[in-house]
Amino acid sequence: MKFSTIAINGGLTINQPVIGASGCLGWGEVLSDLISATALGAFVTPTITVDARIGTVGSRTAETVAGLLYNTGMPNPGISNFVCNVLPFLAQCTSNIVVSVAGGTAQEWGSLGSALDQVLEATALEANLTGLMPAESSTDSASLITFAAKAVGSLRKTFSRSLLIKLPSDHFHTAALCRVVENEGADAIVTGHSLRSAAIRWSGSEPSIRFGEQGGLYSGPAVKPVSLLQAQIAAASTRLPIIAGGGIMTPQDALDYYVAGADVVSLGTLCLVSPARVNTFADDVAELLLTIKGDGLSALCKVGRPPMSG
Image: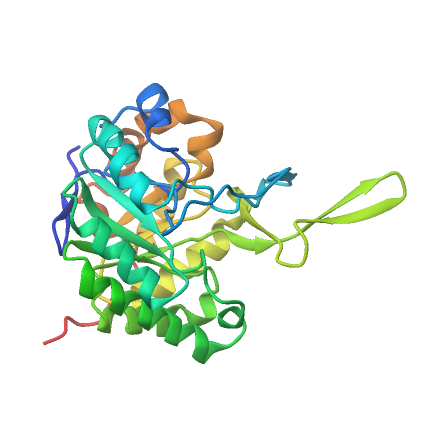
């Protein structure tokens, strides 16, 4: 079965309705060694910031039931080094490159957009709103909306190609955020960011909290019901294409997301624990789809999408 191409404003075209989530395929070396470049509709980089970051010092992961708790601190080479030294290598591995970025201020978002707009290898940009979001924005709705609007507005002024916005995992604000970022010029919505979480570890009779007050991020099969709800809310809130993920381990999981309104699904933990399965994932989805409903992915959607504007 041949999938229809998903065309996103700004030039990004996805010929497989399956991509890799940000950070789960490394900087291209994982893609070339383990995962075929044709197995995924797009390659999403780890998150890039204006300045280089060494990331979290010490332990970065903690095993949990049905998933992984992590706090990497977003290690990355910084935007200048990435453009000069990493992006050229990545472009040799795959042609559909989505660069994930995070800023803390409007100026940083603008700088990131401007730097990437100058290199054609960056087919699209994914704004990771959670990455450097101010602490107050995680608890104050008005602050969150303002931060998102400034981020997208700054990027739209400086980046001319496809602009994807990855929302925080808090589904209570999903509908409002979808409307705000669409008004500011977003071309697609990405849902399914890892959930903010904590873990307790015992050494003898002494307990300790992993990753301190800010917690870590949790991904894996157990987050699927939460992420599925966010995808559904987003699909009901905007006509923009929806790229959704969270806990997808099987083709049936992917079909559940298409039913919830996703146009494309992203694979995260699966890339880490079983990269060989990624190579056949889209084909397995197609085979399963033929046994359920053979007239395409769009026919699976059970969410009422808003009417087209204008």
